[in-house]
Length: 249
Image (cartoon, rainbow, N blue to C red; front, side):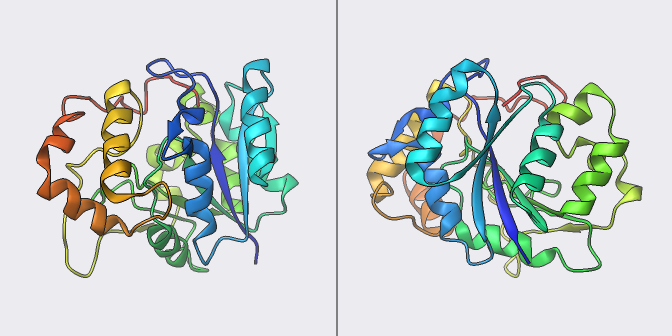
């Protein structure tokens, strides 16, 4: 079974343009995400899904330098972009991640993929949040992705890829992945990069823990943040944009 990680990435961003190629730990943010996905045991291949726009030629060049697969598609219809990537790279299972999550944990990726059994259509750690925001992973069978593409016709469904699952959960067999078995809740922590302050906080963590040279389990990073609360305060004021608000990535 081919489990393909598809990274949603483009240069355009309303709050931090060009963030996916921002320097982080001696590499680009995209490179850090690719590296972490390659550490996941359940991932067969890593693919960057970007747009056909000229601005994203730089994303394509960086993905090529990293040896990752590339698929280019619509800027606005991200769902179609993902379907195209899944078809091009013969995915049986798709793990959806975004390029603005440079603290992604390979173990969490494997945990979410492991929850996608034969009796489950869609698994994620995002609907019931116990992990820090920025460890987001969604996994679905390709036929589930194809079904979403057939049924999801609203602008939100086309832009946000899995929005139709959130809008019509009764149509899908869903597995919610939480930080078990200890029941811990670190959802107050914000590790995704949407703003300059987010990037400053993540750069601080990379410097503190030497993450540019070697990834660390997310709980090590949590421990560092809890021990150094001034790091978390750098971006504590940043509000997460609701998924219903457009900001195609």
